[in-house]
Image (cartoon, rainbow, N blue to C red; front, top):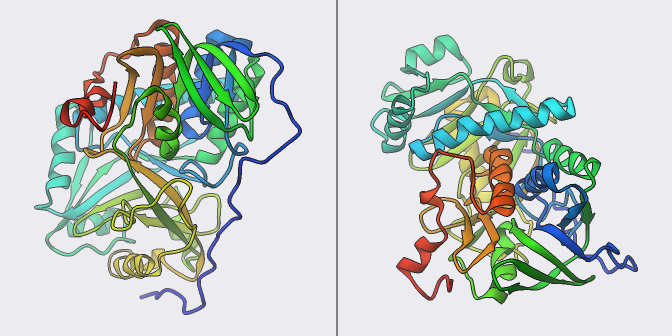
Length: 416
């Protein structure tokens, strides 16, 4: 078996982007129809969808430079999949693919790469069973492979006799960094304005039909505000008396320069998710001549803050991942190209927040809880509809994502 190289890990620890002080006074126009705060994966999508009807009446505000490494939307790939352990998400995922197709058609760029996907683990694992039940209930095709069958279809995997894999052919990955760029470029092409290195200091709801956004570059006003700030969400919402109970964690992924690169290109190897004692995931080689893997919620044992994270590799987590890969996908690993970090913003129940504030419907908010990028384009569309009409054409059900659920459980957590 190929062992991880003893060569010291090259760890990518970029100098954090800061809200740079600049002589740029920001946009001269101060009044807009819609303002989007936070231009990562979800915010860039919301900017694009808002621009389809709002054009130059849409402003996007980013506290750092677009494409920064401080949040959770950077990097070459994010898993996309129809497979989920809850029918609410499987329905949303089907619409997400349609929304991505609209963006691909308009831009001419390929953003989604379908290579199939495996959800694996012990056959008795509750998550694996829930995935199978949810896909069955929604009529999503999949196959169940035992340890012998997985070897026939994907010999790269080494499953134990009590382990299975659910194969869903529509899974794959989205090129996240490229998708962010495409969303923003298309929005700008339609006239949307983008103000980078602009920190939001506070917001003020004016009745139920307008909002003031106070920033490091002055005050902007709009009829609608879309808040897509991920781990900085409460920094923005605090000034309207809203605080969502979020846990922020620093997560990490590792790129491996596998000597068996040909076996792990997207045409030969699927994305994968593993459920057992730990929840690991991986992506075939894309963006680098290397495979990529990480642990979902690996940083939960040591919460941080959006501005307090350290960008430093957690080596015990890397070693735990290496041990799993050596046993289960031995050819996947090789000398470490680099490890890099990102942030999760986790709700208590791990479900999204996708809603308008009950007492301030002109303000809509999204929180992704560490698993949202695959839905970026459909969520952006829904947020644009909230801003445009205070409702949405999406009929798959959004009650699970209500912001008011936290007020019901703990009135001190979300003052709405």
